Image 1: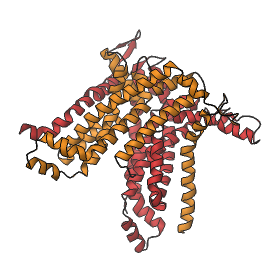
Image 2: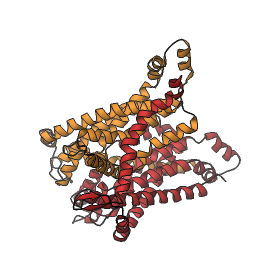
Image 3: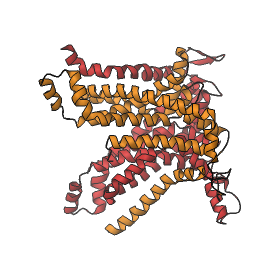
Image 4: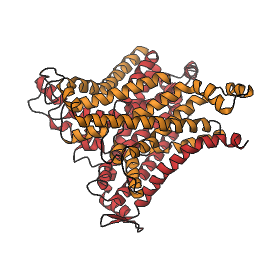
Length: 281
Length: 258
């Protein structure tokens, strides 16, 4: 009887325990680390706010840059993903299975692989430059393709696109064709139907896609390292340094939580704005 | 009007597909190019890069580590996640949804932050970093995915067949293994394969939790740091073959139709 009543909770217990021990505990520990300091290469548990002060004083420009990049990449990716999902759902519905299958495959195509591929494409002796030279269009390699923020935007948009397409397609698929037909029977043009039926109903998809891409970009360091060059000072690179060459975990922890908290704020504002502007009229 | 729309979206979707696929095509192309540089014109074709890479002992040890990690992650996250999903669908709807969203929180943190939180946690506890810490940290982000997929599968599942079995005298375990599991089995296997594909591909978290050795992505990172070399294409291709093979199998099993 007890097992019957508490059975469902008992089944979820191992998973919850794992979650507590290996997610909540490490995350809490990292949060606390942000308020400690290093003394002669050892963690010393003295409470202080200096790490956060240093983040805002020494790194405010990189913080702004990181959020600008994350915002730009999240907007680009969500927009391109929306175009793809919309076309797949409403313009070429017969091809939807094939198109989505293809996109889903590239989702698993490998993170490092994709970033590396862009490095070979954009490099000064890379695919684009050598192709341009071969066609006689340029006589000198163009260096400006690689090691700049634009390369990071291209590589991350490419990586995140499948991730952004899936939730958007999911919410577009949920729209009834009959609702759209009803709107058009009542005299709504294609644009009215799009604005008053399609957009309001895919708010959730837009918000989820934006959130996923924004969070990933805000915490990325691999892409910035490989194709961004030294001018691309993303917070992720500084965070990773605190656990590598710089070895200052408290500062790294403070940086991490600053990024997370500000990301959450940006996402809340964006979600609120989308909910307001795209609501059903 | 319709025709104009078709033309515009045809061009846009075509362009997006080219953007998405061309990097992979280029990787594939240059894995067989005889040139040292990854550039046009291609001087000739060769299998040397495959031979060179597959002759390295470090590659095979990374390959083996990747297989070990992904197999363990697949088993552990599938068992934990399926049990949780089976439990959660039976809890009152509201509580179940809240519980489920809580358990999927790890997907909301950037991998970098997850990685460093595991690193500082394990170091503080004095746990030596090796493949087992990699497995544990992978399960943290793959278990939520199994929960989400299996939960979604169970929502469409008709509970009444289980009740019939129970009325006919089956124990709850018997009912689970003879009725529930055969029906949701493909979904469970599909979820397991997706978690394995994500585990094989993970670089960031593995980088922080592996200590010594290598898996395929960290091995590839090591090669990248030494400079460009066509053998990197072959590592990338090998990794891609594994993840794409696994994910095709999983999509067939969970019958993903978009």
